[in-house]
Length: 406
Image (cartoon, rainbow, N blue to C red; front, side, top):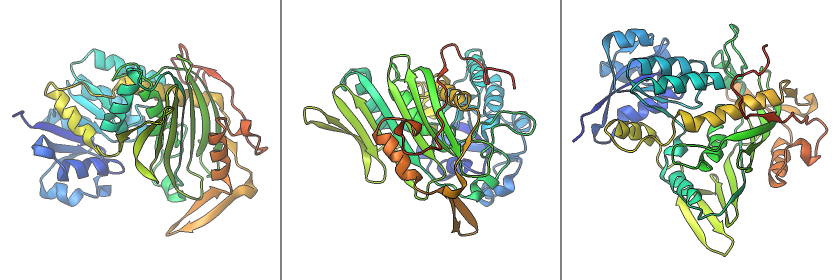
């Protein structure tokens, strides 16, 4: 029986709640033990009372944590702008890291994180939970073995409306950069819906722990909310192997439409619709079907896969190397459309929701879905006159965001 791994959590609010729920209430065979939490504002934590009852210490910063503890694994669920710094600091202490998605804000941060991992004994996993699921691993295995044939086009869409409270809950939601110039690049494509852009790149990776490399990206970025960055995007990425990736996402739809994807291969189309069927299914051109399962079934299993890796098990499925192409695409998208386009005012409507309100764009779901079904960007679908195409950004040798000094 392996020794229990001591685990510390950085960030107890927001998505950190999911980590606490798993660590406190779904700890299989007591494989891990939560020994400490780092959060400068612990009063926001839903599990504060339980942490106090269990006498789990809560520290205001990581330096204070390291003065008293050396966990085997640190889970980082802090805001995007802290991911690189906190991951590197943990690695320098000889501690392995599970950092929540996205990897970081910029490609230069990703490079610093990769360098730190190479120079220290620990590993870094990035919390794109689908990458750790049995369903995605089975699909990726078939892709690598050629069962599906040559990949042609992968596309995905997810429409998740977010009310004003979503952007008001902190100082970084919807921001391009903080007041001190720190890059955040928070958007649906970079954060809430990042899984579904990353997953297309990840499935196309030639090995279990790699993703496809983007050669270029073109994006159309829009906003309905009074924010700095975009709340709606349609984008096209071309990989170095010539595979087209199309992605459509928004926080400004009236209705919630959970992830949908269609991955087109030479021999089959692999499809998924969360709202209709929980399983990923391949439909082969010869009439056969293959069910890969539910990519959400693993839940927070990424934590326990990291624990297993610490005990000499399989290396983590998604690390810095696999997550970096998503960061490249996000940086390239911002370069492609540096001026976010405001939706026409007459299309922006508001809807009261409890103690907040939702701003949505009338007809946006239909416009984006038609573009999705036509395999084109919104401007290329010729449905509207307000869509502005971005430029194609070459991502080969791209190593700094932004390319030109601000």
